[in-house]
Length: 434
Image: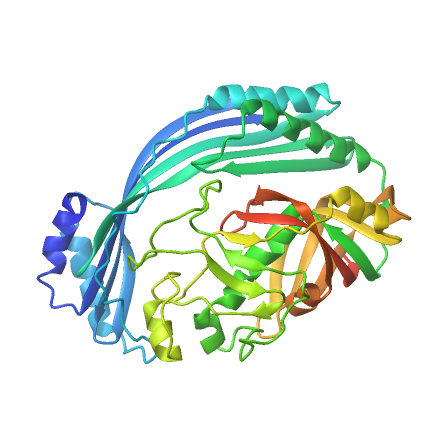
C-alpha cells in the first residue's frame, strides 16, 4: 500500500519472519465546555504508524514517530529484536490471503459539534444545573494495514458526546458514542443534559451508605464499565497466562440464563466498529456467552494455533481482545424492573474499577454520579461512600433481569465503547469507601 511503502521497503530488507505495518491518518474536531460555557475549540490531524516484527519466535512492536523518515527507528527496533529471547507462546501470524471486497467505505460524520455542545449545555442549565461541563469529539481515521500477505484500507471513528452536571453536591453524567450508521439527531441528544441534571438533583442530598449485600439495578454505564474492564478475562492469552476466571470453562455455565454476550464489531451504530483485526483478518459477530454458557475465548492466529482452534478475528497479535461488546437486551423495561424491586440500590455509574485477582475475577469499583436507594419499587433517597467489592463470575451468575432498553456507552477509562442494557444483579457485595 502506497502510504506504507516507505516503511515496507525497509522491513523487506531486514530478514524478518513476519511484519505488520498499520498507519492511521486521523482527523479530529473537539469542543469543550466547562464552568457552563464553551471554552475550547480544537482541530488536529495526525499521522502515526505502528509496526510488529518477528524473527522466528522473537517478537517486538513499536510506534514510528517519524513516518516520513523511519529508517533509524526501524533499525533500532530490529536491533532490539535481536537481543530478545524467543517467546515460546508465540505461534505466528495468519498466513491466509483475504479478499476485502465487502468492506464498507465511510466518510466523517457530518455534524456541527459546536451546535451539539450548545444544545447539551443549555439543556443541562435550563433543567436546573448549577453548572455543567463536557466534551464533544468528531473523529475519523483511515487505517492502512499491510502484512506480508494482505493489504487493506478501512475507516474508524464516530461522534463522542459527554456531559457532567452539578447540582449542590450532586453530580450526574451522560454520554453517547455514535457510529457511521447512527441516525440519532441533535434533537435526541438534547435529553442528555436534562437527564444528567435530573441525576445530579436527585443526588444533591445524601446519607452515608452501609456495607452489606444488595440487589443492584445497574445502569448501562455501570454494566459497560464492569464488562469492558473485565473483557481481558475472555482473551485466550489471559486464559493461557493463568489470568482469567474462565479457564477450562468453555461449554460450561458461567452466567445466568439471561446473559447473552457477543462481540459486535460490524455494528456501525457504534463508534468502536472495526472490519479487520490487527493481523488483517476480517472481523465478525462473535457469540461469547449464550444463555449463560461460555462459547469461546477470543483468539488471534497465534493463540488459536496453541489452543488447536481457529482465529476469531480478535487479534491483538499477542493478546486478543474484543472490539465492541454487546450484552443483548431482554424483554422488560427498566421502569418495570425498578418497580419490581423490594429493597436495593440503583447505581448509575462507577469510577476507578480495579482488579485485585484476575484468576478469580475479583474487583472493586467506586459508584458515583447517582447512587440511589430503592424501596418497594420507588427511589427513596441518595447515598455515597460505598464501593462494590465482588467478582465478575458472581455478578454474571446473579443477573436476574435484563432491560429491553440499551445504550452505547463508554466512560473515560474504558477500553472501547459497548452496547449495554440495564441489569438487575442480586446479592452484590457492597463495602465502605474511605
